[in-house]
Image (cartoon, rainbow, N blue to C red; front, side, top):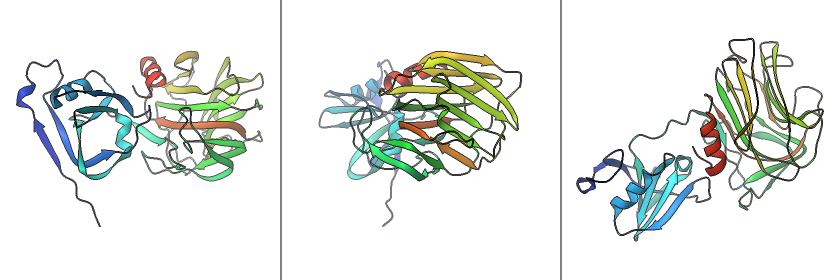
Length: 306
């Protein structure tokens, strides 16, 4: 049966005097958020008044949803938009102007699913692959590849400025071990990241057509520890961040280090070159069609939203 939802703009006449940025929310009836891990949940607290719950949401730039029931206020980040389900006994309140995330693809890896919640580019062709617990201890909410990989469908993932983010845990150092390599064909339009290069260092390379642009670093990721890694490109400038801190950057000679093409061979953990498949754990894989700022990257590392 097709479920019917309705949206009502609610204006609060008694909200005057509160230090907030707007005077109304949108009420989402018959809906709930069905996940509460730290990537979603911001804060939960007791209050007598709904208006104080809504005021609480405005304390956080990343807050997008509030749930008020039985004098309990629960605040959720914008990541919660991917986990809304039907509940005839519940209603949510959403900020009137949602944050524009500019996500091209987002693979959160939740409950044994490799679904792309942003653009339906679900991962497939899993090889030497298993689901594991994530950094919070949630079962089947990250994945391990042991000389393996997972594949994303063909598509246009990069067409100008972009950011790649992921949580990674290395289980071994392998020469040119890939986090990601998306490409049109060999030596054409690659976007690739290695988690351990010839000296175990992390690096970030792109190809615009068959012209290669290189950003190497001296940073080595310790084994068996979760790290938040970020790779950005804005025009000619490429950057690498580890755990919210900039570790390498370079201004290339080109106007753009990638071009907008349909990339056919898109892998996590595998290379188009004759390099070994990865031995690592991966979670929360994201591609944005903008450069995240340093402050946004730091916020996402610390709180999983910016």
